[in-house]
Amino acid sequence: MEISEDPEFCSMIDRLRDEIENASGEVPEAFTELVELARALPVNGDREELHRVLTEPGRPLWAREVAAYSLGVAGDPRAFEALVLLLNHRDPERCVTAAHALARLGDPRTARAAAALATNELRVAYALLPVRLLAELRAPESVPALVTVLERRLRPDDPHWRVGLACVEGLGTLGDPRAREALEAALPHPRLGAAARTSLRRLDPAH
Image (cartoon, rainbow, N blue to C red):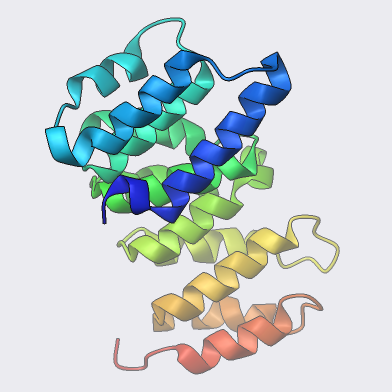
């Protein structure tokens, strides 16, 4: 799929255009030029200009996000660090975009970074997308990290229960029997119990 046909790319561009218009009243020509450069990447293979955009001091966040996403889906490992920073951003829409690109980057460091972000209790409010990314990656780090996060979310009054729910659903997707104990512990939880029952049925005893 060419990047111009990528729904996540199109969504990102629409979001950034709205952000820029709301902040400054007009979209600079540099934004349009960068979008066209990103769309041409699969054809001309010119990653160096995008890499310059990503690394030059003083570039606005929207420019770095477009460059990081484009390089990431193109499989350029130089996008890795910027995408990990975006995965941990306070804006959930930026986290979604970064997770999408990281899943397609194919960098062996991605799962370790996602596990570190997901299990950082000081940043649990931003753990939803790292948790979902771990389930998508199906990496060796995925099940241990999701179990760790889920076990911390089992209090009935835990304010981050949506992160726990993502863990329950991810563990069901992964189907690894190592998750059984944590999922059984989630059964009494008022918000996690139904999903935990579903995920328990999906565990593969022959895994």
